Length: 357
Image 1 (cartoon, rainbow, N blue to C red):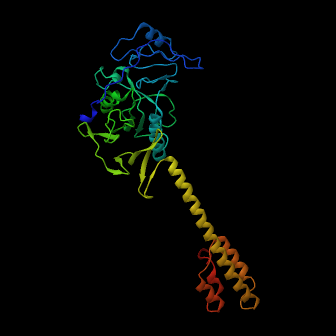
Image 2 (tube, rainbow, N blue to C red):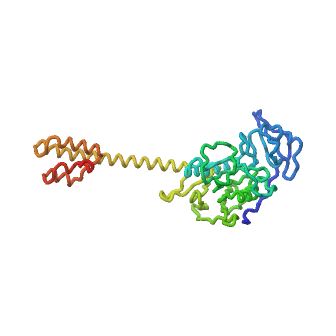
């Protein structure tokens, strides 16, 4: 196992107070703070847990985490209506990856905030996810689509393997991302496991905040080599998403971008929409120019042909016949062909569009 997976920071202890806290102006009590790490939860803490509407007597509640009426910081706790508490930088990183992956792969292969119900994977029950029987990746991509599957809890399906997982490290769960999740994802056969550490909770300053592991043929995770650096940011090659990076735009905005080799630009959903709109405008302008050029050429040629018809050198119906044919085909003949008709060296029928001849 890669030495980078060792947690370099100690996990901060929470306030061990068990008093119920009220936010100013709010009638909804927050969850009592859990006991400090390593301590045993008090009866007051358990009373709070058992009073929750989403209380599950079979779930191994962890006193190191907070469980509120509709939120938690326990990333193994997947219940309908219970959201995972996340800092803004954490949420923008997840949403960025989710949105860009959906742009590339469609809506039915990319998932976020879904609780995967796990079978017995042979992982010791000392692993919190093996013990709870569920895990909730920040973002995961499956090989085959799950059409019309909007359930919060979904069964892990080994016949539809997970090819890609991204976990964004947060203060309350980064030690899980670096240890138990590595073990459980390896047992699940997750092909690529990428981690992003926007706040340097694990990775020291100066080290890339984005890195990844890929499952080898012997079933072990190996470091994914850095593909290159771009604008001072690490760039990786994913077998699923291609070349990508995480752009720190400041102000808690972290944007997942993929490289569009055809256009030669980094894209995310917003930039892709803007670029598509710009290209559509340019195409419309070009079409307008072409239409103007076509119309001008048709008008000039027809005026000369009408003059010849007035002079009796062409049948009177010829200009109108050609005008209708050219307009219908959005076509105009070469100037040399028109000249040949005007000087009488070619028949007027040579000016008909190819499909009409």
